[in-house]
Image 1 (cartoon, rainbow, N blue to C red):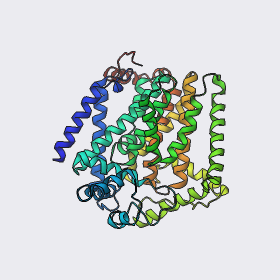
Image 2 (spheres, one colour):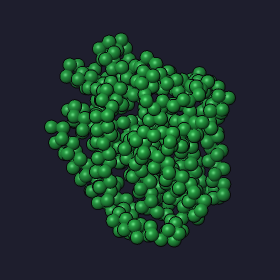
Image 3 (cartoon, rainbow, N blue to C red):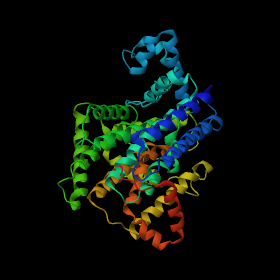
Image 4 (cartoon, rainbow, N blue to C red):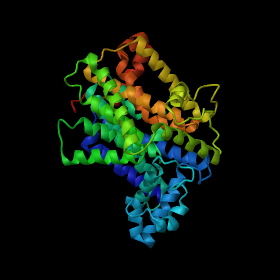
Length: 450
């Protein structure tokens, strides 16, 4: 039954991609896009395979523990359907009755070590409980649905980038869809798939605001904001000032764009810090220290084999600043050969090697960029920097670092696509030309789609 349903939904999504105008991408064959979707489905099942046969303890498996908790919520539909909908939408469900009847059987709903930072486990549990209405409890269907949602987010992100830069359609396609870590972690039954969906939709829809504003656009913006608030709120807080700066460059010279981003981000951080302090009585530095402590406790409880020896954060500005170099190193460079030798990290080590090459090429083969492209570079640089810093500061588990920084990788590789002149690279390495042209013929075509 599960195989039949997963194949059926894959075919339905394949047909939607073939026929819906949203998936008509400038310069990209729709056939190639459909194959990329199938590749994401395959990647999603690869992740499921790993968590089924490699991490065999369902109680600690990141996929199965949330899926099994969702089953408890879903089963309420057949005993007390009103309870199911209250838990699904978070309405009148925060009381002793729900705790005793349901939540005490769902350890990830209330974890004993959680700090006062909003727990993002609720969103993935509720997502699974909702999809069970259509999957009838077959996890393979959930994988296909998550792969499709992630694919939508990547499609929206591609449309945003290609609207502002025509430098390399194929390069942007690979950067946004086909980075190995993005495929693996972003296509499976993890909250990263929801983050990619919400982030892509938010950026795409906000970018369209001055040209066409309607009820549907407002709905998708609000829905994306709501979803990010309940999965990774720091992603939302990072992207908001970057979109504000991006929307205010029309009357700014290209030379001042970086300054505008610096001012907007600095102002946003300052206002946010004092707002949390005064209105919510929240200390940002204390929240960072508590989040790191949550990870340490979790690693000890689950005997995580990839725990790295991070210096424990103190809830102070001095502690955060002194830990920034190590956070940058862990977030940007790990895993590295000789230091992190597990075979599971080989794709990530290869990605880090490509990132190093990209950085070198940025200096050796610089590209001429226009005003819109400079804004894209600023968005990407600030977002990548923010994700790496926060991940490095709060996450002492190497496996989690690898997973969490995937949301920044499409932006990072897109920087190289925009900043590096591919014609200079091909001229320097002529043996690459035939392979590049072959891929162009298979993937791209001339188009005027906007």
